[in-house]
Length: 109
Image 1 (cartoon, rainbow, N blue to C red):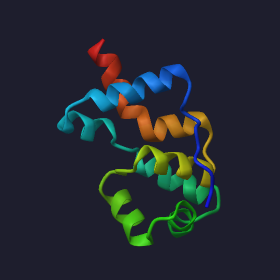
Image 2: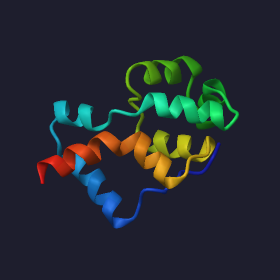
Image 3: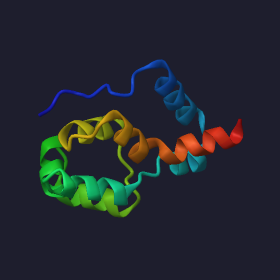
Image 4: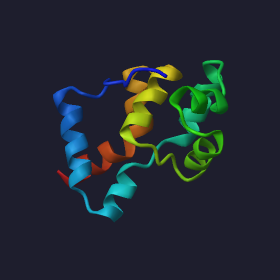
């Protein structure tokens, strides 16, 4: 199994994570919406498969497919492992896993 990825540890991203944790459950669900289409496209573009990603991050293939179908409800650890496995650049990972949250946070400010 791959080591945990800490691509999002810098202070600004850590602040976003803390903002997500402080949201109520309805807001938090919206905050975690993943750009599944972009993730699927990059998985194919990088020459791998959803099944290979599921195997690499240690979850069942059907669980991975279900999470992808339901808007990409991945834990932060799973998101980091996906970013390592595909591999995704830091910008790609932020666009895929945090784009909606960043947009909503900026609207609140």
